[in-house]
Structures are given as structure tokens and as C-alpha cells.
Amino acid sequence: MSALLILLAIPFVFPFWWMVSSAFKQPGEIFAYPPTLLPTRFSLDNFVEVFTYQPFAQQYLNSLLVAIMVTVGTLIVSSLAGYGFARIKFPGRTVLFLMLLSALMLPSEVTIIPNFFFMKSLNLTNTHIPLIVLPIFGAQGVIGTFMIRQFFLSLPKEIEEAGLLDGASRWGLFWHIALPIARPVLGGLSILAFLYSWNLFLEPLVFIDDVNMYTLPLSLRNYNDVYGTPLWHLQLAATTLAVIPVLIVYVIGQRQIIDSFASSGVKG
Image 1: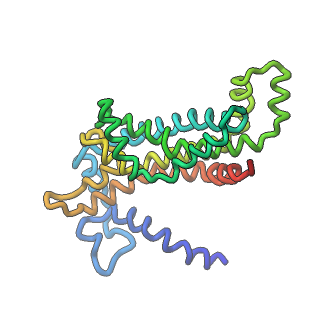
Image 2: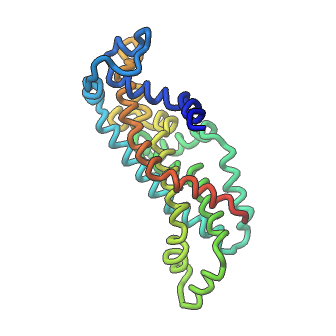
Image 3: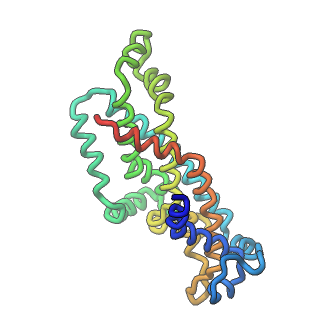
């Protein structure tokens, strides 16, 4: 069984191994035949050139700041909305929630043009604000609202009733009772929101013009020569650096991701 699992893992592991290994190779060695799994001479020159070819450090920081802001904003908005839909009864709650879910049927390619003109009318193009606001109040926020709503629907009503008997307000129930219990699903949502923002490409491509404002997905496509030919040794080195936060986030939070999807499947 172990041997079978190793064989099945090779198609998934090999591209990552080749990327990391090639990041340390000389340009002529990357496509050498026969190919080599390890560089003949390990060199950090590619990684140094990544930062001198364009403002990669600034772009890396841009991606980190945007991803953190999207993660925090998604947690705030989705937790409040999810709790409201799950525990507060108001007219039209079901219809409004279905309308919210229907927004997931529209791909971002459909909404990107009206969103661009809307942001342009507010003089917010070529800023990071659209990259933060649109995911929070867009598809990522809707998914987060759904996950948290499903989790809160599974909570016994007796927990809140006991809090009401102790004199807690609705905000007190949410802050002191509901949120601490929802820590697993909030952890999973934070990881999903971070990864979504970190890999976002279309919105930065449309809204950002200044190379100093680029996020990493835009930065990675910029390693070309004057003829537009990709500089593979730089692209692979930059991509290797770009996946480090993704690996860290996933390794730390893979259990939260699994638990969050499991809890969001509770009926309600």
C-alpha cells in the first residue's frame, strides 16, 4: 500500500520538485537533455537577480498586506452575516440568503467590467482597495457566510437561551459564546481567504498599472526578456519564493480546512 501511495504521489510531487530544483540551476541547465533532478552546482544567483530585475520585495509585501486585509475583513463580515442568517429571525431571511448564494453563479469575468467602472468612478483604480473590498463582499465573503451560517445552525439553542437568562445581549451572545465555539470554522475560513487572495490574478491585472503596486501573480509574469521570451530561471526562482507562504499556511491549517468543510455540511 505504501509503495502504491508513493507511485500515485509522483505526478503531484514531481512538478514541485522540478520547480524548486530548477530555481538553483543555471539557465542553460533547466532544459538540458537528459534532464537532471538536481542542479550540477547549487547557486543562489537566480534568487538574487529576482530582487534586482524588478521590485520583487515590494510586490511580495503588497501580496502579504492584501491577503492579510482580505482575511481579516472576510472573517469580520462573514461571521456577522453568518450569525445573523443562522440565529436572528427576520422577514425574508431565506429569500435574502438564496439571493446571496445566487451571486456565486456569476463568474468574476462577468462582474469585472462593471466593478472596474465602479472603482474608476471612485478614483480607486491603481490602488489595493479593489483587491481588498471585492473579495470580502464578493464570492469569498459569500462562501464564508455560508460556512459560518451552517456551523451556527448546528449549535443547540439551549446555549443561547442560557446566555439570555444570564442577561447577555445579542452582541454578548455572539462575541462571548458563538465566536469562541466557531473557532475551528473561522480558522479554516481564514486559511481559504488567505490562499484565495494570495493567488488572485484577474483583479490585479485589471485594476493595477504601477509595477510597484503589483502583487505576486502579476509580478511572476513580468520576468521576460526584451523580446517577451520567459526568463525561466528567474520565473522558477520567484515562483519558489512565492509558494513559501502557501505551504506554511496549508501545513499549519490543513486540519482546520478539513474540519471547516465538515462542519459546513451540517443540515440546516
